[in-house]
Image (tube, rainbow, N blue to C red; front, side, top):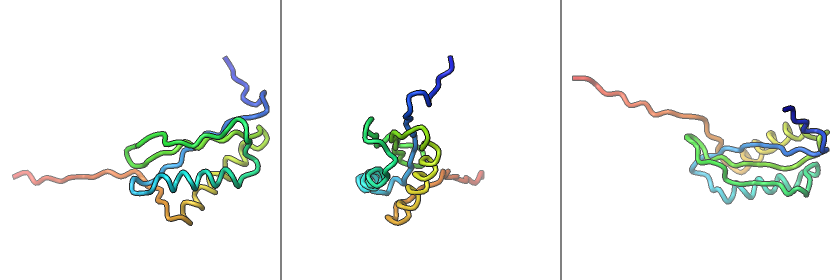
Length: 108
């Protein structure tokens, strides 16, 4: 079965914003809501979703899911990724990278 996502005229953007476990999740949600409110290409209906999606191995991951017109999809996808990074940098929110702890034991 082939699904034509553009036939309805709208699509949902599915973005993930990962932040450090040390960051304030209420502040992160406020930042993400601010990005939604400032972006005129995001549709009011269906209502966008922002929520804590997962507590991953290296980050706390937020689902960021606004609805957009099909013709705005890719431009807005790239613009929102950039806006999230810029705002997190401005607000000192940490975007972590995967890490592993290695413990070395000396065999005697």
